[in-house]
Image 1 (cartoon, rainbow, N blue to C red):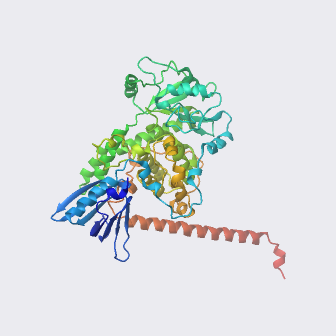
Image 2 (cartoon, helix red, strand yellow):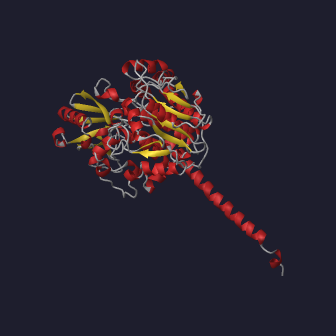
Image 3 (cartoon, rainbow, N blue to C red):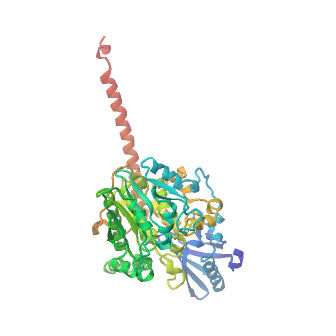
Length: 552
């Protein structure tokens, strides 16, 4: 298929661009296969380059021969284009709709993008399971790297290499996989080097109504326990939902078959509920009525902050079991690809200071989201403005955005413990939904291999780890903190993430000025500290000199 077939009118002059808090721009609108571009001949006017993949939906309005297209984006931005001529407006609108809903991944922009920066470090080669396993080997010899899934036949959503207990052979893993939803048998998610406790993740057990059991599955998860120790199974469903799953061949671990494990249910909402919550939240944030009571009521009705609280609470519970109680943990919900990953990854942010660095967090996203099989292409096909009635939208859910929101909440509570800034998290949100990079394409590792992303596209990490970008994404307040950090979930501690949900609805000038002033103060403080250190050295030298040499 040629992109030209979808572009009915490639160029229109005299188009007016309107955006909140920015001056109106009149110029030429051009459509390419991947971008909507508006450029003006006015001096000092920034061009608009908008990826079609970033467009969630459009609305058309007409007054006489003047047409207006309202473009609502996945990054929550809303822009307005006034297009002269009804026919031109209709053609532009239908072209945008066609180009923003392409089904084939190989037609996406990452396959056509060529970087304008020098790739110093290839992000596709930055994070390999073998490297992570070497770090694990330096701490313990109780685990091994298994290639049981080398052809993706055991579990289509797992990577080719997984870390499992050393005493469990591949045949046991294959039998345990048949007993778990989607073949997602328990694998290592995190090793806590302070006490040797671990966190595992999996899909739900397929016990069904007959109470089926699997000796191999029991052996696998018991192999993670130390002698005389008990473990915790954290199920991200209510007990009622877990019991109902038996009718669909799902279920939960029975106490009689897993006597060394205590099951805890911590309900995190399913994807359809989360999507509805995001839609309501963004609707509240876009409410221009200026009625405080109405705005707060809408905000509360969205339940977004409740979901944030549930995830942080569950992650803290998992971290507490590991760090304070010295117990190993298995986390799962139904499929093990959504709420499970929110909990396992956020727990690591709490427990492991490495995950609070830029590269450490990238590694976490790679391991616990991309390699672990979170279906990004399904979940991020539409955002808050998408057509909820379309068949595609049934899989939409802001699962990854919710995780990033939880991380931002912890970053705000511990502003000196993170090497990265809020801007780093916002960029991850944006690129998960629409990007020139191939990192978030596909739904699992096997998809990315089939699409040959590492050969045909550029990795987001290649750009983020460029020295210039690293500096821009760094937190000027950062001071390495090796301790476990325990966030608060008290109502007054959890705030609306304004940097995502309100950034297009208000001017950022004051915040930008405050940030620049903070950076200036930090730099000035460093200068003064260097002067103090220099004077102390001079004083120490003077004090050690022989006093007699100063006497005539």
